[in-house]
Length: 67
Image 1 (cartoon, rainbow, N blue to C red):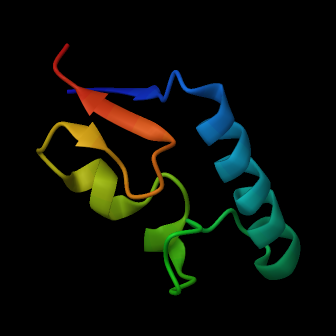
Image 2: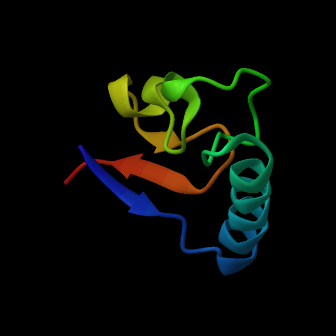
């Protein structure tokens, strides 16, 4: 599988602002879609990285596709 950044720049910019806000508050770029702040939820989250399925991550910043 190939992971790429969403081509929709508006979505990516919005998510990046939320990730940067989480970094300021909590010290790491935790996924803005999660209330849990541990290493498995640092963007891109472990759930997305470990998944065998194609498609977007929860927040929409990353997309997993066939090579």
